[in-house]
Image (cartoon, rainbow, N blue to C red; front, side):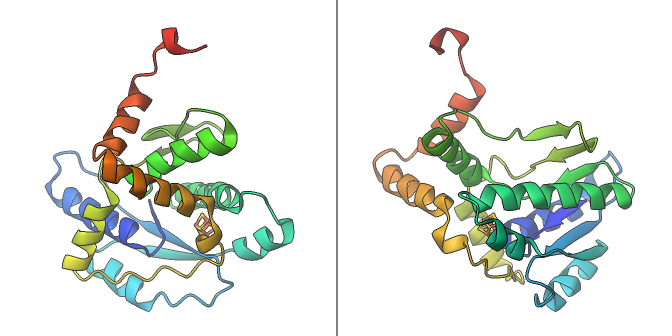
Length: 210
Ligand code: SF4
């Protein structure tokens, strides 16, 4: 099951998996789910058409995520939102008869997550590219994790994909946006900064831990 947001990342992921489904010697099926967090106001018509062209069944799940976040007035709404959505998608995956959930996180997402965890949580960590969630018994995979966001954006524009993500009221205020800006600034001086952070994630030496 593809966790579809309607943004460029999950559209490229859907397209890539649809192509892979045709060519892979390992046979697998695809389905997708999008969570409408807006209270039913999201226009999904273009997405539905695109997924139908890819021959990927799409289900739409309404969930009042934004109102819950507003009520709870969380310090980090994005992490609550991500947890809620992952839980919903895992449940939807199981209902659809699969135990693999594919998410569209890319390299920039991973590096920003490292910075956020470091600066705000005091921990050097990121989600795994492949992760088994023991509670739901669903495996989360992130096939785009080594691909930079700018390449995904270029490809989505080149293919004129119907990007239709709902405008999130928290996106402009999110700490992730600050991490993105910091990275952009640092990348001017250190072009390989993202690869270096990913390399560090894969090579944490016990001897370096205080
Ligand atoms: S920006 Fe909005 S949609 Fe994205 S994780 Fe944060 S709260 Fe959720």
